[in-house]
Image (cartoon, rainbow, N blue to C red; front, top):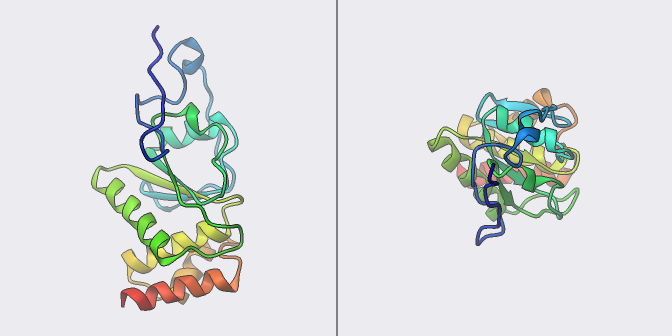
Length: 181
């Protein structure tokens, strides 16, 4: 069986070349999936948070659950991201324990909105899935649920205990709320 071409798009993300998460052939049919570390849905079948996926089986799990976009908030690319051309990688590099810029928040929200119009789910990760990930997820709730920054932080921490690790990250969510009021 011929293998579908894999390559990088013009923006460094993966091109979606086919809808499976492994090279075509008998091995891909047997590929098991595994729940990625610290994975949870914030909006079921639409938006999830997780720690950095570290195995091809993590990408398989995401793909099986309708995730077609992975937003990476880490400074380095997640390993094995090229094993799943059915998931497009978006890079928004944020230093560990730091908060995203307003531009990065807006870009993240645009990715989620664009995916939603196509009925595609998005997952967002940082190293452990707490600080940067929680900050972006809280900003999503501020925008879509019209929550205050404080209420969005509490809701994300309810769903994902330990989320949003620093005062700077809390401040980014609260400032984002004031920005869109």
